[in-house]
Length: 400
Ligand SMILES: *Cc1c(COP(=O)(O)O)cnc(C)c1O
Image (cartoon, rainbow, N blue to C red; front, side):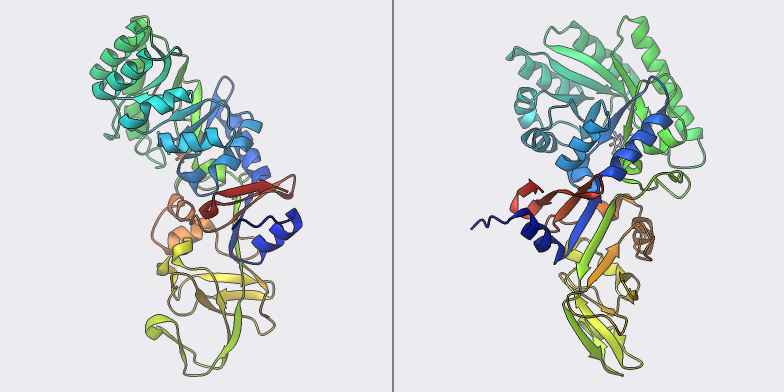
């Protein structure tokens, strides 16, 4: 079943089909910009949940460690286990509610857990009691997002319980903002006020966790993280704007490129229609091509007759419906079967950026990247050259 290819053949194989290119040099540069922006005395958590926002968690996590990040964060215990299996030894925090059936395996793998309810704390302390190492806990306070978090009075109680336990360490206390990506800072200021009061109360009670954190990317960019020593960066580390109102600065660069190839070049005759439901009809004879990428790869059906790809000789508007596995585009006359196409890039070659893709689909910058499917092979660049690859659906990866 498994074919063992030489690195050169592997590279050729990946490049001759639909694939994503993730520039880890840019990722590291973005992380360094965020560290500088966060300011002296603040360490960076690289948020690599959801397969590093689609880019590939293991490769990004190793690069984040190289960039000097103190911590990695994921949403689920399975995601933390994927990192450990991928050789990531750095501290990992699960920022989502821990699956109670996975708490034991999390502790066995030195994974820090977020606690915000009495049940979650009891479960963690119970598992910790049967182990030699204390559980590492971050306590999340609900200061207004009203999702997973303990309201301040409960947070105080949970913190005291952890402090009294010989089996756990309260390493961190944190909160998460609802609206840091808006120009209006009043909601964030109100959350900060509640958070700082809670932190002070705990300090007055003699509880001083090593880490205090509140900022996501938008809050780092807007400098909304007083009296904290850790910040959590996701979207901006991938070079993407948290929102139109709080964009990244000029130095940040999108790290994702998606490419494909032209598989069938044909002429769509005047008056002929194309793809499911024939939603596009050629007004003249047109040079057209089929491309093996579709909504099952993460290129949304909503881009039908709206989006575009780019060939070396010019733009290629999507014509007709985007299908599950294929899309048809208009191409320059010079286009030939086997030619490369850019599907998404930082925009310098005229292709759609992630931000434009989001805008065309009525969503943010987060959703298009997290939708990039597992069947799309990833090629990682380090020092400007291909350094490693991953084919998520085959569970295969390797170095060049
Ligand atoms: C996803 C997430 C982040 C990262 O947010 P970005 O806006 O991508 O920087 C930070 N903290 C928590 C709790 C999160 O869930």
